[in-house]
Structures are given as C-alpha cells and as structure tokens.
Amino acid sequence: MAGSAVTTTNHDEIRAWVEVRDGRPVRVRGTGSDSDSGILRIDFPGGAGEEQLEPISWTEWFEKFDANNLVFLYQETRKSGEGSTFFKLVSRETAREQGGA
Image (cartoon, rainbow, N blue to C red; front, side, top):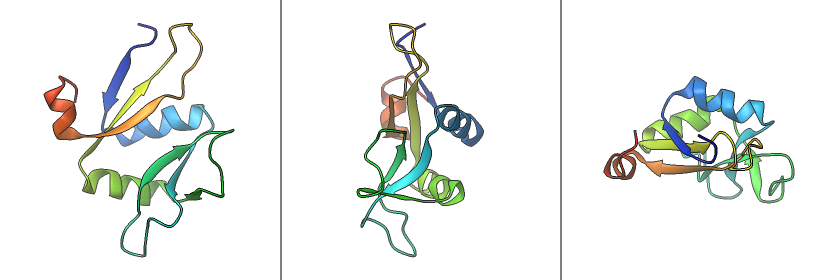
C-alpha cells in the first residue's frame, strides 16, 4: 500500500532500502567518540551533508542500532507512488506498543 510504513530490524533489508536510494550510514557530527557511534542518521543526496553529518561504516551503524534496541521504520513509496526516503529510528519497545516489530 503506497504511503504505508514498514518496520524492520533486519540489517540486510535496511541496507538494501538505503542503498537503492543512494543513502549512506552517518552519525551527527560531534556526537560520537571512539567507543560510541553517537546519534545515527542516514544521509541521502541533497540531505544535511558533510557539515552536520559524518560517514560511518555499516558495521558501526548496525552495532549502535542493535545496542540501542532500535527498529527501522520506513516508507517504500509515497502516496503519489514515487519512491520515498522517509524513515525513523524508534525503540523496539515503542514499536511493539504501537503494533510494529
């Protein structure tokens, strides 16, 4: 259904969705350290870019994703039928409460 949201914790599914849209794993610049990846984001072309975001590896991104018990909530297509880059990172507890993952 166009415009509907899907939730997943599957690393391959998340990575495929992001890469099809030319996205990449990043953290908010200045929020991480050697032992903490900081605030996770996905950067898409035309997004916030290098000044605000710092590229990180998928391995590091997924380690933080799992350590914080997150769920990837995303939209495949907009109501118009166009591909969507909408996503949110939510806690697994919140997703369960709302009937998701």
